[in-house]
Amino acid sequence: MFHARPLLRLPVITLLWLFMFSAAAETVDFELPGLDGKRYRLSDYRGKWVLVNYWATWCPPCREELPELEVFHNNHKDTDAVVLGVAMERIEMPRLKAFVDEQFLSYPILIAKPAARTELGRVPGLPTSFLVNPEGKLVARQVGPLTLEDLESFIDSTNE
Image (tube, rainbow, N blue to C red; front, side):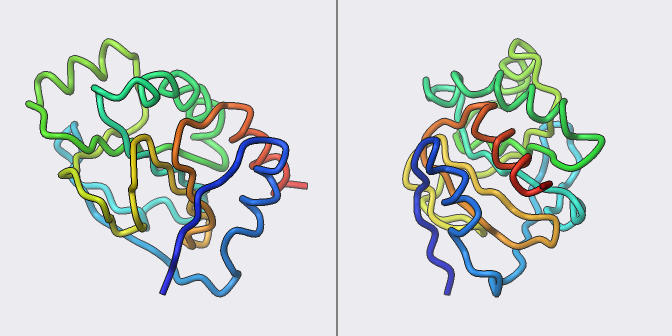
């Protein structure tokens, strides 16, 4: 059974991301509806790193990291990584769409009911992010906000 552990901040973060989970980790998958009406499967992104970010509009640390995730997504979406934002709150869809539009978010926003456990593991608080490698295996979890520097450092270290 998979047990995720939270990550620490840089400079240790890169090592933790690399060694958090064993190479024998199982592939993970889920399917969720998107704010745009489409259905999204994690497995559709095989071949790329996928950052799955659980967040909510009412969460200040979530709101703080959104611009960093947007830049990361735009820097990598055509090459090696994408961001999937998962809104974990009870909110009217027009209100969520307005928030996403106000934040200029271009990465897919998926919809999930608030839960302490997801297909990827525990979500003890928001934001919580899971990193899935190009083979579809869960390699890390971060409870708390991420920065562009955290993400770029990790991707750069794996491409060396």
